[in-house]
Image 1 (tube, rainbow, N blue to C red):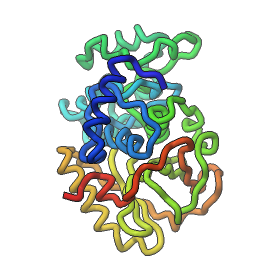
Image 2: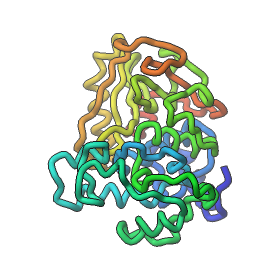
Image 3: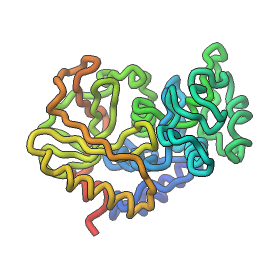
Length: 310
C-alpha cells in the first residue's frame, strides 16, 4: 500500500506514540491510517470506525471502500441521523427498506445516483456534508477510470459487513479483496478452528461477516461488525463461553464509555454452536486468518486489546 508523504509522516508519529500502549484508544487520525501489516494495527484500524460509521447496504462494494484511510464521507453521513428528526426506523441505517436522511424517503438505496468519476462524487457529497474538497484525496482517481462501471452514490456513505472487512484488509495489505463482496474468505485467509483463534480472525456465516477483537473467557469473544445501525461491538460464544456473556457485555460498555461512544444500538450475540462448520461454503460457519499479517499481540484478552486494564 502506498501512502502519500503526509500520511507516512503522520503514521510514523502515531506509531512512535503508540509503542508503549497500542490499544489505549482507537487510532485518531483525520483521514489516514498507518501502513502496517500487524495484528495490533489491523485491530486499531477496525476499532477506529466503531460508533462513527453508519451501516449502508452495499456500502464498500465495487471498490468504494478502497480508500487511503478513513473516508471523509462516513462520519458526516452518520451525523445526519443524529442531527435530523427522522422516522422511528432511522437507527436501522441505510438498508433496502429504511428511511434515507439524504433524500427524505424510503427505498432510495436501489436508485441512488450513478457515479462515474471522482468529480461527480465530490459534487454529490462535498457541499451536502460540508466536506472540503481536498479531503477527497483519500480516493484514487485510478479507481474511477473505467467510466463504464458506475457506482451508486450511497455505496460511498457507509459500509455493510463485507464492505467493512474489505476496508480493514485493504488498510493492512494494500490489496482490495473483492472476494469479500461475495463472502468468500479463501483467497486471502487461512482457515482456522475455534480452538486457535486470535484477534483479527474473520468469522463468516449466513451472509454475515465480522472480525474477532479479543477473548473474554475460553469460548467467548468480543467482535466488531457492521450491522444495521452504527458499526459496533458484539459477542460471539460457544460451549461454556455462554457463562461469560454478561462479562463481555460489561467490557463493551466500558469500552464505549472510555472512548465517548454514544451507541444506542443493541449488542448482538452469536452462538457458534448452532452453526454447521465448513472450510468454506456459503451459509455455513467458516473462520479465516488474514495471511501475511504479523502476530504481534501477546495478550489476546479483550480487556488488554481494548485498552481497559486501568
